[in-house]
Amino acid sequence: MPPIFNQVCRHIYTAALFTWTDYKTVFFPVTAFACAAGPLHSTSHLVDGWIWIWMHLLMCNVSNQAASKEEDAKNRAWRPLPSGRVTKSQAFVLRWFTVVGCLLWSASYGAGILLISATLFATTFIYDEMGAAGHLIGKNFCNIGGYVAFESGAMLIMGPRTGLDDNSQRALLLSGALIFTTIQAQDFADVEGDAASGRETFPIRAPELSRVVTFIALGFWSIFLSSAWSIGSTCRLVFISLGFYTGIRFYWWRTMETDRRSYLIFCIWLLIAHTLPLHIRSGALGF
Image 1 (spheres, rainbow, N blue to C red):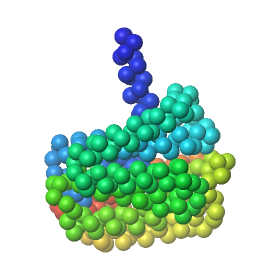
Image 2 (cartoon, rainbow, N blue to C red):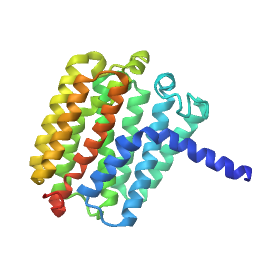
Image 3 (cartoon, rainbow, N blue to C red):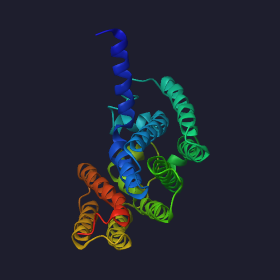
Image 4 (cartoon, rainbow, N blue to C red):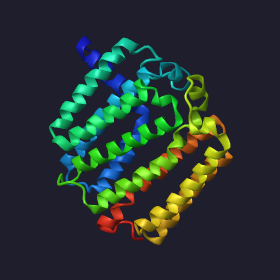
């Protein structure tokens, strides 16, 4: 194969590695949420939304991973920086290149999307460059702000592009509250790496309380969202059962491996939670 082709493939693979862990945590849940709550307007809007989400995931991940190479060397040695595919100086250049690219791409959709893109950059900058990643409250507020920005941007792009109606705004508010009370689920499996890098997370600060809170939050949101979106009895039973099962796993099984599996199940639960607004639009979950 021509050298240029090999180089292009290598760069594509490197970009995929930067974003790999966030497909299950951000890309698919945000896509599901935007399609359900937006609602989805057309296939072309879906593709536009995918591109926008992925570009901003790359921007956030390059910045985050450039600031956490030592932590990733313990937890995710396959990532581009600890594996040696990319140097820290190259990641720094790529980081600012992606910022400019995301802002220009968002500007093509109008001032509203540009503002959301700027918000994502701001939360990422505060998180990585101003030390918020190392503080429990700052870390959570940046994560929540970033997640809500992803959701609102995706909804505006994938939807009819006439603004957010009452159901969309309600879904966004509930999603923000949900993420605020369950964001610690991502930290249980990374306690060792976070502690080594000096980060303060809920599981590190309060190992027992954080698991109790996670169990209660998953149970509460499973019941509350089922009622708030008026889904059918069978769907309600499945969703609530999955929520309580996930909460029980986080509380009872506490090894790094079981926490990783529990987090994967949590991501499935979160994906389902993000599709529940679909019932208000179409009645699809009435059984």
